[in-house]
Structure formats: structure tokens, C-alpha cells
Image 1 (cartoon, protein in one colour):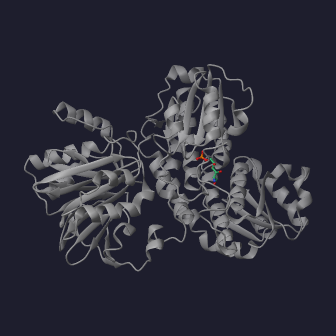
Image 2 (tube, rainbow, N blue to C red):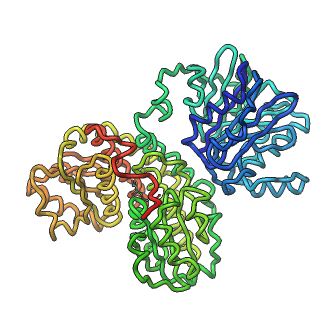
Length: 611
Ligand code: M6R
């Protein structure tokens, strides 16, 4: 989720690139850098921290400079901690290169390049691409050919921009699974990860597609895909700058909801060994012996991350046979929890900075193995734990967490599957099935996003209700809790999540014709019938029922409910992720109709770094 910008033209390349990075900082902000070709050579400037740090370093650098070619990057660390050395651009010989994405086979390529005498100065996966490109150029290949040869060696997702000091009239571009646009005008050309970066300079864009290689010069953009020359149509963009920053969406929250198919894919990418049905978790170094000895897993987190722990408990107990308990971090830190050396303490946090979660982690630190499922490399929690599974959600700007939640579920499923496999608890066939379902998850989430129009209509019907009840059983119970939290946070409507089976022990008293009841129903032979009886109870008290389900065409369900949102069914493990999406959309559209500040709801902060 890094931001990237490139420029060739008559204006100061440094100024254009830095101003582009300012508009992309939301994509990453742990370090930034630029490479500018000038006076016969490439000059690279990099700084740890926000773009402001780079700008301090560059103070005065743009003076007297006009025209030229440059590339710039704002980083969201995936491989290698945030540091100046790991900041992009990476340089090898005559090449400077920036990258957004993940190179999965970088370790084997780095070993190969090291054996050939290449010196590495960072811990990143990106630097190998700079070395490969430099090598192929030095072997006498044309730049376009050299970038293609480089990408032929890589597995993973990438958008690369590179400049070559011996061909300072062009930017070399490669795109696979992460976005790249080329902005054009008569005298200038721009390349960026996002349109807003350069929208102030041009409104005409070529949107590159996966597999495209491009050589971008003023007045010409050569593109090939699969060895064939291709042309991409010019799109004229009319967005205003604020809408553009949000990728054309009205709010970051909606943008982030729509990013889920992509970031879920990024979270499992490179971690699945499909042939052997195993999970590879690079930053988890628990040995088989360590795993055999674990006799209890303790999960702690706050808010949405705590809901993800409730689903994780199901995964862990189902796939590993190890007892698992879940605590609010704010409670755990002040109890006297029993932690033994055979416990595994795992915390979940998007930001990696939540004070209570950090404190809960500290209670266990030094007593047992500690692990985090975390979205921010270099964060306090990520640095403190013994093992970390990084989710690849990219920066989450909206206070209401969406893509962080679903990627946390993917992270916890990977963990459970890994531990279960190492302990011999999950037969090969079951592992293969879960892994193959996981590969299909991004498209099931895409399909769930298609419920958006129906959800808008449901929001119109119910947005003025004063209270909502959310019900679910099994893994759908935490999903109901998460749906209720989303609604509360951004629409300020009172909403309660409850296990459907508990309803008759109290909450049923609340039900009348004014109370919308959102029920999350998973296709499960065991629980479906039970949930249906709960719905009959709500129906007979005139409650208004909205069912979110992956059961198709169930007549009685349709008869009982005001609305039924039908989604594709993938599997018992992955169903909770698919069912989450309409609940996020429902909260979003109710809030929009009620006119609240969706991305910055009152009284809330994105990162709660105080108690
Ligand atoms: O950064 P964390 O995941 O540790 O944050 C935990 C909670 O503060 C967070 O999930 C909060 O509940 C969100 N606003 C939910 O949308």
C-alpha cells in the first residue's frame, strides 16, 4: 500500500514528485524518498518518518532546478522495518527503483544475486528488483526488455517504477496486482499509484492493467502485455481533488470496505504452500517443539480487534484442539491471569499502538511465547512480540475499522491452520480444502460487495430507528457484535449484539414493531434450525427482521424477514468474512443518511494510545 509517483517534464521533477507524495501519504507514512536525475547522475534522498522529514532534508534542493525526471515513494513497510536504509528508492548501479507490493520469492533471488557478487544495503524484498534490472541493463538489454526480464523472475504483486542513468528520458514501469496510472499531457508525463497524486497537473490518464510493462516518455507511452503491444484508452477524470484522494469514494470508510478483496488476497499471498497444503508464516519462528508444548492460547485485544479474537477462538479450537480464551486487553491487564511457559499469548491490533493491548502483552512478556496479528510493521506491539503475523490491509484511515478486521480473521485462520498442521491435528484433505477456499475468498467478498444497492434500500427503511439488535450464533455471534459496533460508532444509534440463543433470556423484552433485528445466519446444519426458531420468536412479537445470510432461497426465511440479503457460501471457516461485508455497508449507509461524520465519528480516535 505504498504511494508512488514519477515525472518527466519541464517543471522541477523534485517539486512535482514531492507534491504528488503529499497527496499519497495516506498510503504509507513510515519513510519516504525520491530519486532525481540531474547533472548526469541520479541523486537519491531518503528519510525515516513522515514526508515532512524528507522535506526537511530537501530544503533548498529544488532551487534552481527545472525540468528533469524523478521518482518518489512513501512507504508502508512490509519487508524490513521502517528505516532510512529500507526506504525507497533502492539503487543498484545505474538503476533507481521504487515498488509497491510484495515480492514473494525475494529470499531465493537475493541468495542468487549475492552469490553473483551483489551487495545489499536493505532488508527489503524490493532491492532485488533493482539489482536484477541493473544486471539485465548491464548485459546490454534494451531498457524495456530489461524490465520485462526482471519481472519474469519475480513472483508476487508489484508496481515498479525505475529510472536508468543511461536512459534519462524514460521511466520503466511494471504492473501486476497493484494499481498504476499514467497521466499524460503534451509536454509532461506522470506515473502514479493513484490518480490524486498528479490530478493537479493533468486529467487524462491511461489505467494500466495486470501484466502491463510500459516505457513512459514525453509524447509516447509504449505498453506491452504478454509479449504483445497494447493500447490503453485515455480516461478523462473529472473528480474534484477531495473525492480523488478517496479514490472516487465519498468516504475513506467506503473505499476501505471496497479494498477488502485486494487486501485479503495480499494477506494470504506468499503464505500458502498449495502443493503441500501448508502455511508459511515468515515472521513466526515457533519450532515444531514449541508448538507441541503449547497447552493454552490466550487472545487479547480491544474493540473490533477483540471481535476478531472471538472468531479466532473458533478457528484455534477447531483446528488445533488447544483450549483458547479471549479477553478484553483492558480487563486482562488488571487481572492476575494464569500464564505458564506453555501458554501462547497472542494480541491482535490494527495500529499496533493501542495502550491496553500493549499493556496486556507486557503482562505475558518474558513468561511465555508472545505473538501479534498486527497491521503496522515497526509499531510498538510488532516490536515487542516474539512473533508477528502482519496483515496486509495497508493504512486504514477511517476510524471505523473494516479491512483491518477481515484481514485479522485471515491472519488468525492462517495461524490456527499452521499450528494445527504442525501438531498433526488437521488432515491433509481438510487443509487443502481450507486453502483452496481461501484462494476463492477475494471473489466471494467481491460478490458480497454487490449487495450494496440492496443495503442502501434497507438503510433507507431503517435509518431513523433508535435501537438495533444484532443476533448471531457460533462464529456469526462475533460478526453480529462487530455489525452492532460499526453502527454505533458511525451513526450513534444504540445497537446491541447478542448470541441468538440468549435472546429469550432478556433482550426479547425489547422487541416490538419499531425494533430492527439484524440476524447473521450461516449455512450450518447444526445452528440454522436453531436460529430460525429464534427468528420465529422475533417475528411473532412484530420485530422487523433483516437477515444477512449465505443460505439461498429459503422460503420460510423470506416469509419471516422484511429483507433477506443473500450472499455466496464458501465454507464454514470463511463464511464469517463474507457475512461481515453487508454489515459494514449497512452501518455506512445508515450513517450517511443520518448525516454524521463517517470517517471521523465524534469522541473516537483511530489509535487509542492512552488508557
Ligand atoms: O488499532 P487496534 O486494532 O488495536 O484498535 C482497537 C480498537 O480501538 C479499534 O478496533 C476500534 O474499536 C475501532 N474504532 C473499531 O472500528
